[in-house]
Image 1 (cartoon, rainbow, N blue to C red):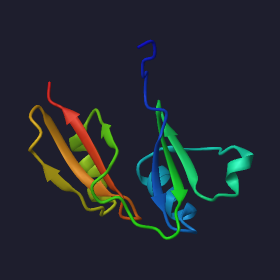
Image 2 (tube, rainbow, N blue to C red):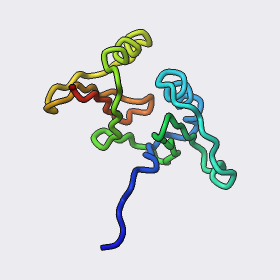
Image 3 (cartoon, rainbow, N blue to C red):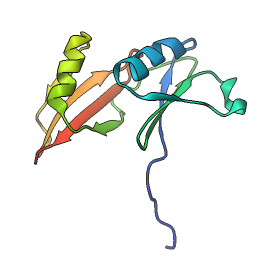
Image 4 (cartoon, helix red, strand yellow):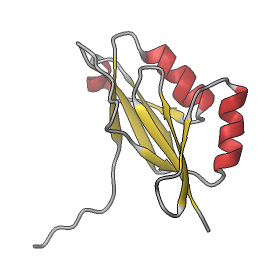
Length: 123
């Protein structure tokens, strides 16, 4: 075989029609991702894109919409305890999970019900 996967370009999560402002409030306002301009030819599809560092999240409109309850992106974070304090400040719910050896992690949901994992590898 002569090809090799190098990285993930982006993660696409679905959301209902009219989701853009709520997505901005959550992914930009709370999580701190910056909005990324969508290509002109894709703007008509709705949704919104976000980026932080090399991580991209594309929120795409799906009709009918069903949130991803099991499938999810998993983000590695440098200070999970500080992030949890941030979530508490914004009164966002999360569930702690200690079943992954060597990691502290939580699960949370975006405003549309999509599952998100955030973890910090123990040193």
